[in-house]
Image 1 (tube, one colour):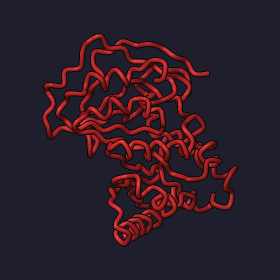
Image 2: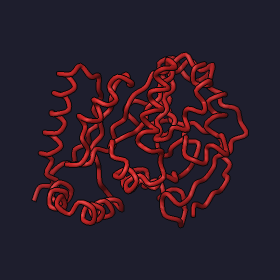
Image 3: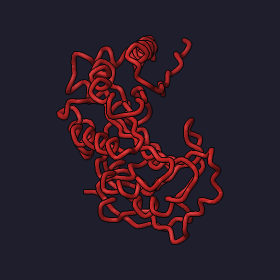
Image 4: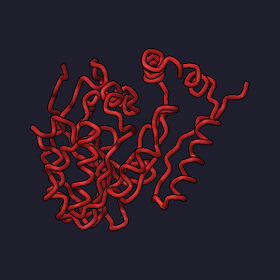
Length: 273
């Protein structure tokens, strides 16, 4: 059961420290996707919710119009940094849709990152923007794996189809391959499947910290017991050689196959004894 609340906010827009976004817009607090690896779970420290992350959603309500005149043409705005702006409840509340309508004349480039094919509902709105791109997160072609790691998101095929439709309508698209599960995610198969329907591909490795470290390790223990030792080595001893080699493999493969890409790999520093 997901607890839904409506909360007042003075603004949907906040400044960002992300490498590719000057501002972020998060129409909701929390995310109902219940992904077992969700890095945004850290937000719970600031929300005062007693429910587990994934079991609550605050619907932001702002009575003030968005003042986009302050944005420069060189600014970048990301919709959906610590929530999915197209989570299932967006179909009812339409907060994201209303935000997009208010931003149509904005000169700054807009970026949307989602795991939902619900973004197709707003395709006619998206086509009115001068500079907009839509990214869809995907880390597997195996929907059985998706069901146990991302239980409340659109299926793998629905997300791929969404990218196909967006691309066919002239909207810039990209794949955000995240998070890459060590020894499980087949990045070459995903790239080959989607390379003709995205303008570029972003790669992000599976970072495990805080509460989701034991949760994911337990998931591996139950579902992929033969990989547990490798995961323990990677995440408990912080041996980065796997990720360093993986990153080089990605770069070499993409360069060889002329696949535009961006790397967002994060390597933990190995602690000195």
